[in-house]
Length: 434
Image (cartoon, rainbow, N blue to C red; front, side):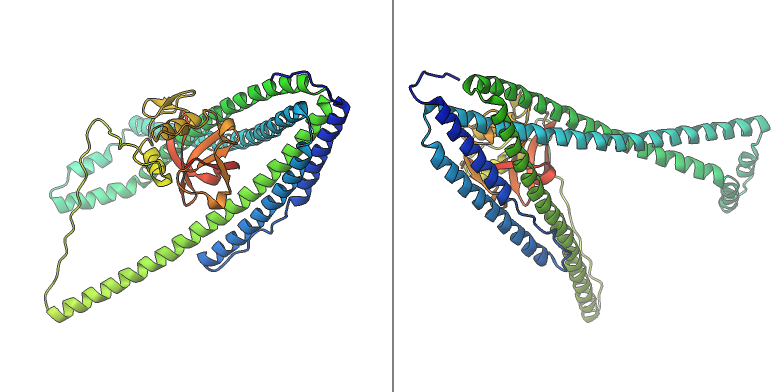
């Protein structure tokens, strides 16, 4: 940051800067609304109405915050060049501290999930070993006792019917052995499932820690500039932390409530869809039975399925016109491709912001290369107004919105580019570039 000498009262500038911090702090604290947790509704339509009400309240909170920010901006316009630079630096501090705090919370949550998964994996592994040792002991006992009666019984069968009878008898004799084997196979599958889940969670944790390191490095750089720009560093930093904490809690609460409603709506819509399909199947069956009765002959239906041919080399459709739907569709082509930290290749590997950057670049649109810079680029929109192709920004992470609460993003080295739900982490902003 370059600071030039100016002839003005620094003390007055500092007082005006403190007035802005006070106005913003009071505005944020007075605009947080305690939204009631939605109650259970009978239909998905009822749930959507509840979600709409919640989003309206969220919009009102945002409007009040914007009004307070506008009032603070009027005061900020009176400041000199140095005062404006101080405000810019403070805005960066508020955003960075909020991002770092959110990422630290997400790391703590992920570490807790890993502990639970690790415990389940360890338990399955111990059970597998126990069953294995029991089967080994059983086989050793049979060998030492010379128990080969079941072989002799089967070999003495005189016909297929006799063989079946003797086989059923042998099965009864060794029911315990079969149950032990089934239990062993089941616990092996369970252990394998937990192992995959554990690897995925650890991969996501490592990526989130890398994102945290990036944000912390940027924060330290900004703090160093801040110290040079403003003598009253400690006081203003405390104000920035207070604003960031308030903003973070508001975002987390609103995102969690909307995510909860989204889950209820999906579940209710699934129930309604299942009921609709059951009714359709019943109607089709009744119509078929009626048609069979009237024609007096059996009717058969045949269905054919074709499996599209696939080539050994995957091809990708061109970007096309720069619309939100086209951007979303183009991005989905690369699901399954690798995650590479710092990369920008949609085929050979990219990280979260590299993915967004390269997808938009294919449409001739240049967007910032980091998730932090994306947080203030383009045009900000509310989450409830998000459209396919918009960029969903989280603390240290970003994704491309697909609509209906779904996203596509470069997730981690373990999972690569994949689909996900938009509210799986706390959303800091939604940005539109087309």
